Amino acid sequence: MHMNYKSLLRFFGSSADGVPPLRNTPAQQTATVTATLTAAQMLGEVLDCPAGSSATRTLTTLTGTQISAAFANRINVGDSFDLYVINSSTAGNDLVVMAGGTGVSTVGDLDIEEMDAAANVSSGLFRFRNTAANTWDMMRIA
Image 1 (cartoon, helix red, strand yellow):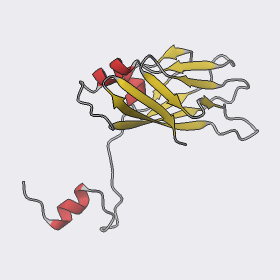
Image 2: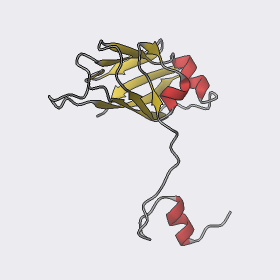
Image 3: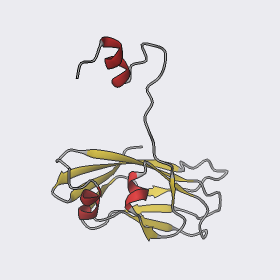
């Protein structure tokens, strides 16, 4: 396949023509109760956690084997994906806690506070990085 200069710029997302690059993003997923996340929730890029039961909710990732299977096992060491988790609850004591399933190690603060008058940080960005066969790190990077 042959691409000219402008096609390459559009393909790689240049704003040289004044238009920012676009990408297709799945619809946001939701989680309201303590649960093990589904593949759709983990791979959907954005997970909204609206008001739950005004109590701590623990969201556990799939196992490392299940995450790899969700990518049809076309994973190499070093491959990664990101998941934004938003705690959109304004109810007090409605904390969201991320937890790693079997084969998923965690790095960083896993608590996501609810939105309230105290202006808590109510979202987190988590990077999942493949470290070995069916083994992942879940790192909070923001």
